[in-house]
Length: 207
Ligand SMILES: N[C@@H](CCC(=O)N[C@@H](CS)C(=O)NCC(=O)O)C(=O)O
Image 1 (tube, rainbow, N blue to C red):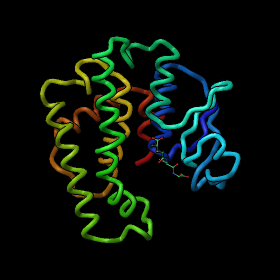
Image 2 (image 1 turned 135 degrees about the vertical axis):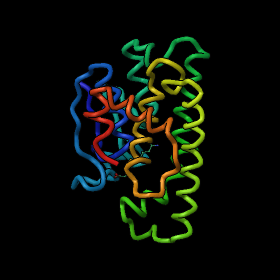
Image 3 (image 1 turned 60 degrees about the horizontal axis):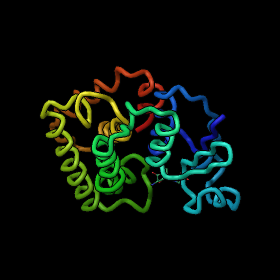
Image 4 (image 1 turned 90 degrees about the horizontal axis):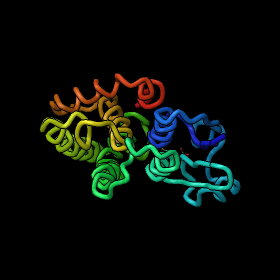
């Protein structure tokens, strides 16, 4: 049985849980990370992930960290070429959205989210919150324009891993109390994702 170390409030853990549910993989979720009573930077945990972050996947002797990498591994291991195509170009189109999510999109929301949802005492600067909100809305507007150009899902008409990592990100954007840009294609995309039981059970459970 797969073991996932982490916690459901973590957006990066939810990507992995949602991917398991789409593939139909049973797993054991072992609680690790802030708020679980078992903080991740213990020597035991650091031996699995030197960054001390969740999620970590344990699959027999294999140990992996980095949520998007774990999702790709699971889709590849179970030959789910609908989620991650074998064709190099089709696969690259999925991966470019996954990489954008992990880099530019994630960087944009961090300050506003830590301030407004986590209420972290290190994130109280009003100008930085406003700048993060503006950057987040700008990134989401790019996604909106892409979806509005007749893309039902991130890479066209079929659901892939890109939609898992973007889906949890859209959930976070909608659930964070900011002044949201008017993005009808993103909202319609979110409603489409909500048709998937695995998203409702695993992706959309927390901001
Ligand atoms: N790039 C990593 C980021 C992982 C990460 O930042 N995880 C957060 C939770 S979303 C974490 O472990 N924070 C410390 C904690 O919760 O103990 C990934 O995608 O897996």
